[in-house]
Image (cartoon, helix red, strand yellow):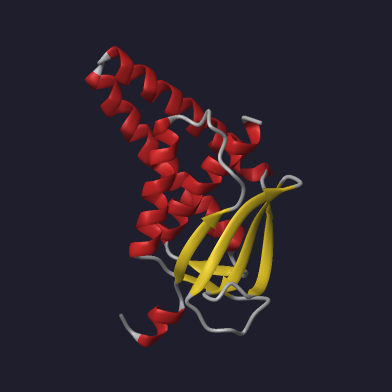
Length: 165
């Protein structure tokens, strides 16, 4: 990694709040995979609110209908917080939740061809979510496409938490 990529990255991601016990194993696995993938490779550079170099610790949570990117240094000291309205993500999050339910049902029924079709739809949905994430963070946080995809997954998981309360 180059010096710039060492500082323009996330060191850790924390989803604030305790996950409800009724989250499906599929959603929990999705969350764990997204966090692990972010830890392995990402590009994340705040463009406003801080001049501090990274790597960064990101705390994600939903508050009053907004997705909050609470950006901290690796010691946990707050640097800046950026909020995004969740409204533009609602349709995609709803579609994601429906895909998860369809996937679970297809697995239970042993319908392999449906699972493959659902997985293709899921990839397309994640691409659309990544594009929206990149657009919504433009001028606030510079991220690459893979980081945006993983952050979109975490938005879906966080929204599941809120909607299951």
